[in-house]
Image 1 (cartoon, rainbow, N blue to C red):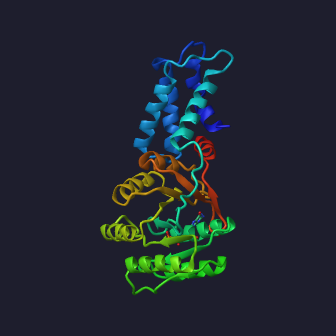
Image 2: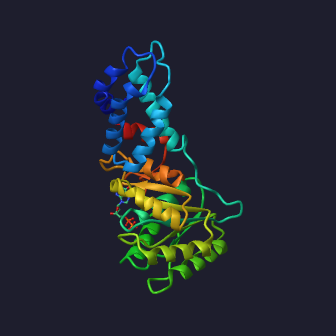
Length: 295
Ligand code: GDP
């Protein structure tokens, strides 16, 4: 496990060998390798700095345990810290005491938000939860049709009012419809832009105010790497997220965005998207992601 990191740490270990304690003087090369490994995995620079400082704090003064190679011990410290920062365990979706549970999907265009909306509904259907999807993205050509088609494919109803209606009004009526239908979950797909945009944020804030969601999930494209940090910061500051879905993890990214998203927002990643198909959604497990990031 962690062959890539272990290999790059090879020369750094030499300084640790024969030492009784991990000290500042013998750990710097090893920390530098961790920094490099995390940057190569696309973790945001500031997040890397904070993380490495924490690892250094944990490692300093740790007794080199007899019979345990210091390199193994150091890797364990890094791994444990990664898992801890990413939240230790999977955090399930919130569930309202009184139905319906309202889930608001947020994110930039092209991240996989509409796909994730359908994926989530299918996931809930497998747990016998009945969902209504609400299509409020009236700006992206064909976004409403896309959700309707996905809904048909997975046999989940979709509430839409075409593309001329006001998104806040669609959300309000969609929620009323969900109550009328007696479904236990309503998932609201919202508009994204190619970049963060004041109007998009204002509209999202208004929808949030109107539907009072139990979950506001930020959909983040794992392939955006470093950028995931800025995106998370802006959405969390302006809208307030309760979790995230990291998409496109079937790509060749090591998934460092997961660490950035969690560290910056303090909110858990709840699911990962691992393909274009509507079944390609998995719960997020910090341990698996830590292994992937360390390579
Ligand atoms: P939206 O603009 O955020 O609603 O994005 P879409 O849901 O339309 O997705 C944009 C593109 O990303 C589509 O081609 C999707 O098939 C694709 N996509 C979404 N999620 C994933 C994923 O987890 N893996 C891969 N490989 N592609 C994805």
